[in-house]
Amino acid sequence: MKKDFRHSMIWLHTWAGLVFCWLLYFMFVTGTLGYLDSELDSWMKPELSAAEEVSLETDLSAAVTYLQAHAADAERWFISPANHRDNPQLRVSWRYPRDSEKSNGRELINRDTGEELHHRETAGGQTLYRMHYRLHYLPSGWGFRLVGIFTLAMFIALLTGVVAHRKLFKDFFSFRPQKGKTAWLDMHNLSSIASLPFQLMITYSGLIFAISTWMPFVGVAAYDFDVKSLRADINEMRGRSSVKAAGESANLVGMDILSQNIEASINDGALVRFIEIKNPNDRNAKIFVNPHLSGPVQEQNKLQFDGRSGKLESSKEQSGALQTRNVFINLHEGLFAGPALRLLYILSGILGTLMVATGAIYYAQKRKRPTHALSKQQMLVNIVNGGTIIGLPISICIFMISNRLLAIELDQRADWEVHSMFLAWLASFVLAAFWVKDAMWKKLTLVLSIALFTVPIVNFFSTNRGLGQSSWQNDTLFVATDVVMLSMAAISLLLWAILSKKEQRQQSPIRSSNAHSAVA
Image 1: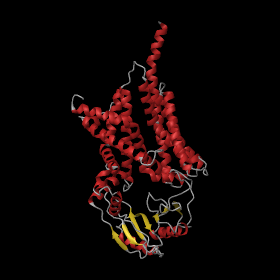
Image 2 (image 1 turned 90 degrees about the vertical axis):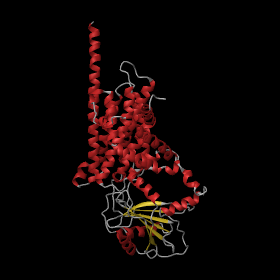
Image 3 (image 1 turned 180 degrees about the vertical axis):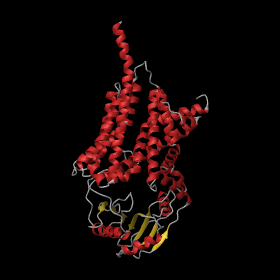
């Protein structure tokens, strides 16, 4: 036991953060990139440009025509109109019953021709986003459970960190760059306190995501452990009630009538996120309309229409408990955020990333003794720190570069983009181990700056959407991506120059001492 409560909290803060810090760093980086998942998806499909927004009727007519031709017997259709950053192109997908031998599918549709939009196979930004809660290469469900443990540790570290800082606001305004080890602590305090409200929200809402995984018996016990009844009631509350096919053929309502009824029923200014059609071409067809969020509180409930007449049947009200849960989930995902608020989400995520990184570095620096060689344990911590903190951004650059350099016709191309990323990450750990005794941080930072510079260069030579062409065509997404990459490369190069000068200053006294010894 520690001598008092505060010191116990400091001990808990240190170890709750340290044990999981490297995986938390991975979650913060990939989670922050998740707020740009749609933009990354578009960047990794340079053959496509965002479709112009047209009427809902036009999108629905093109989508239904395609689905009738390619998946008329599917159990469910999904249509996402091209009207939002999340839906830059008209997207359709379909699902068959689980016992069917036919395969589910999804396509992007050219509304003018009714044909598929052809583009390279890519993992896209969605894969990076899913990594922050599924991890990768793990059996289904295990990544989610592990992330729940990491999130709980993060929440404990945040709460104990608040207790540990007796002078919270003074620590926020303290930054002593010339103090060596203390500078890392100041950076850790600054990044954590500046983003504390966001970190508390994102961590607690992340725990809400996993509540049914870690507290499954609370709900099941109320149903005498009848899981099917519980799921049926939950689906009913969420507007996902089971709709069985009648087995009798019937024509689907015209999309002109349906689009008019949707626009008359949906809130003013609201956009349709996606439409689900259950049992298409059946007498018991039902159409569910899901609007885009305009805020963390879902103002518009899911709408249900009859599949034959197109008449509104219900607007399912959610229970208070479900609405409360959805507020936390919506705050976590930030799907409602406009450009300014999304930028704030991203900046807060970057501060959270810095918080974890500087905490890990400070722990290693605090235990470093200038007059003693590094122990094996200290070298291992330094290797993992360098390979994780610098290596992960390097690997993400390789992920983007591989999207441009891998052969378009390569089998399992999307998987190989991800494999390239993790192989590059592994190589970063190897380099960190090789350089751990000789300016590891300086050399890894130089590698990172080269990787960041390479992304826009490879994009320039492999597509017709390089910085020059994109600037001329007012292609905001590609211009912004290149500018951000070049800016980050310049910052990395500046860090490399600072570390080089620091190394020279440290070596100067040693050289002077050696020179005096030689004269003597």
